[in-house]
Image (cartoon, rainbow, N blue to C red; front, side):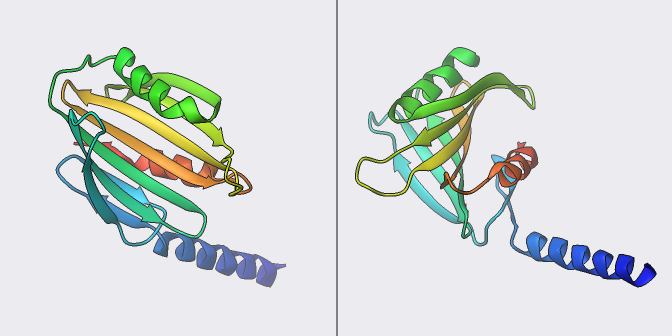
Length: 167
């Protein structure tokens, strides 16, 4: 019995260390977070209306794609749920919203959505979890995770969203 417990403990330790090796901590002037994937890539682009600039930080593994999007806006927006709800309504128009909630994260208002999307081009259905956080009148942070609907991504999402530290 004692050797079985030792074997289980060794296996659990190995599994936990393998999972933790796949994670990547990332910090900049806006946030710190632990991604579930490896290397972080970045992309910068204006929004369609050219009223803000998006700075995306992206990490992927074989099951999920995680993104932190820092949006710097060229005009003041309300620092309340009306702004986070506005962004959530715009982004989720192309899918079925399974769940939605609002609250505050580190003192900042947010709207969370879990959306299922079935593409019309025959590609596999997928889900997107998003948290739209209004940091200030000219700054938002959105965290997003995308995965195939056949993959249970809840645990990876919870780790991702709970490690976000807004600076």
